[in-house]
Image 1 (cartoon, rainbow, N blue to C red):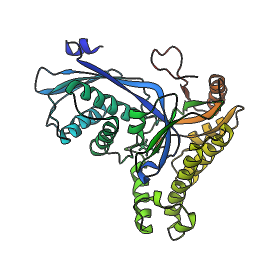
Image 2: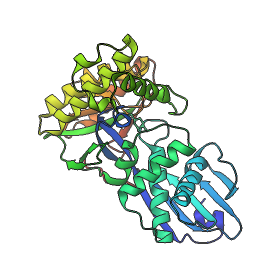
Image 3: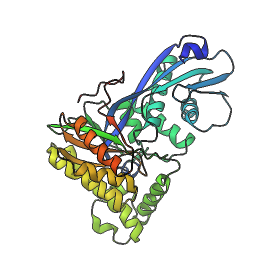
Image 4: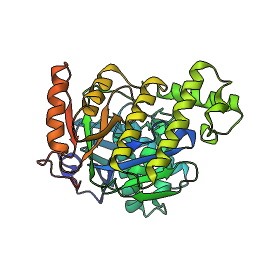
Length: 364
Ligand code: GAF
């Protein structure tokens, strides 16, 4: 169903935003640390028009679901929570929003750790900016999107996903200092390309151990007397923590170091080693991996032409990212998925995007 068919009118504006895959720097953003994501070809498109009555109407093309709410209704569950959350934070920022018709069409996989929610938030906020001539720059859009996710979707997330969706492209890695928001678009390591495979094991951030991990990091910072774990750079400083908090802190400290090294012009081989080390740290110290993902990562790491591989995103399921020899991602994916299937799992290739999909400009 199109916007026209649902709302019996043409949309006034259309905007889009991509999902992201994080190459290095996992669970560092809410510790004021460093991250290195890139945009993926899959995007979320939002079309907007004015509602003829006093309600907002939200339609999801994928879910074939229409949700109608007055401007003061409580926040619902599901995709409408992100959408209404965005409208609310824009109002909180001092703008007034008339009742709207909102149509969402997304090719960003949900529950794969590729930021489908940030893509929706950023696309909707971009649409609002253009429909209502709001004075918002791309950073402000990312900040409002993060606020919507925290206040209305219940995820105590950092700002990586929204900044990546708002500022990254598929041709570069976005280095971001999440404390200062200093950023730089960097080339991928020479001779390499990105491969993303979905493990087929879904997860939701709100329902996972995500908020608990964040609370553990905050507790560790408090005990160490620093604003955030970003302020600890020497592993000797965490000796006083409990075994559990020490593990969490060690992951964050070493992961920040890995991003800072990867930001330099290093070889694809070295970059791959850093990704492998990141996975081990996320599995053993941060404990956000699961058996199926470890299996997929091991298969990837053992495959020729793979420089390195790891879980990506919040964890507890979702996708794995690998850095592979340029031009080989498609054939590597076939071999890996075959072996993964024999181990009893069903995965799928997400990036490079399968050629029949009409959207995206990812260079393979
Ligand atoms: C999720 C969060 F939304 C991000 O802010 C980030 O913390 C990530 O998990 C883990 O690196 O995507």
